[in-house]
Image (cartoon, rainbow over all chains, first blue to last red; front, side):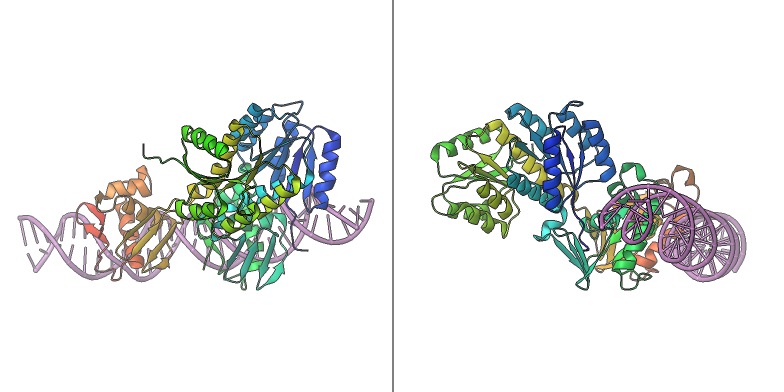
Length: 232
Length: 232
DNA sequence: TGAAACTTTGAGGAAATAATCATGAGTTGG
DNA sequence: CCAACTCATGATTATTTCCTCAAAGTTTCA
């Protein structure tokens, strides 16, 4: 299976809910990581680079709204709030701090799943201008919904980092991206200097995607600047 | 103030709720249009090109989910659902048809506003990124967003210094720039004396951009002064 | 726990770009 | 006409940036 499961981090102090979410979401094809405090959660988001975050507002160690603000200061990952409290002021504060959705306990699991799908749909908007979640250029097909990449309609397996790297390029197809921009998106803000990683993974992507990796037609080098995904 | 109010269309058959939304949203700085049937609503969306759509699922003339699907077939406008029914299956169907949010009546107006802000935030993001900043003169196209330069619509590759040099000229298109001004901008303040470099790189640019590099039509020499990019 | 998959590190050589050197062509004024 | 000047450009060297391979470290999962 070349498909990479979307990564979800659950920040929730109640063990039973945490366990429930973990098992339920796992069976639905998500890769789930769970933590029980806000501090750990913030670190985990920085490390795992999740596709989505589920956050309980009522954590013991930190104020929920502060957690949102902290994460929002460096990440645009979709955040879905779970809360025992349904009071309107708290909802509004959470939304304005950067939350994308808000569910009050108890909630239906089906509804949560549907809202997760909506959030994931949103986070891949940039290249959705052409109405589909599938990006095609030349003989490359990038299917963001199923997380499948094809060359000549043949599935190609990509590792997580390879996939993220290609996604960043696809999101900005046609634009020249600097090394720093790419490193920040794929590895995180603290990796801005390691242009080396980028070269290696670009090389790997070329091996997998280009007909002739030595003569890239798709993943173009902009010497002294960065890289660019060519659009046709 | 040049900023135009976001346009919201409300599709709702209950006159009292419609009136309430109209007046409340108007005072919050939105331009509101209202209709009472699905068919009218679909037409209205096509005509008004709103920034957001508020849709009651329980309309008399059409199924709410079908309305969503119809609109989604040609538009990505954010859709917030209002519904008297809170049953989970309906929510899921609405989300998967393309709805972005779902509120059950009765709802708090503050929460609706917050969710509207979230939805607008989402739809804004792509727009902010793709500000086109393209300069065209004669057969030269300078695309600062994608960092691409074209002559006769054909891509021309420029090295970093060549690109910076052209950018300085484009920024001051039509004006005469002294050697020193250009050197300071491209190489930095300590290179003011090396007018030499400038000649070499101007020559390179002409080779790449001019039809006849010996008879420049674009990159003009102002003898004894500096250079000038001709605008048409 | 051991094997497989993946990521990070390191190093050599290739390629692209920049800086320097060198030459000739046009222009101006005496 | 010939200096003295500015300008254009080709050739050469130096430097930076880039690609790839291979090995070591890490994580993941059965």
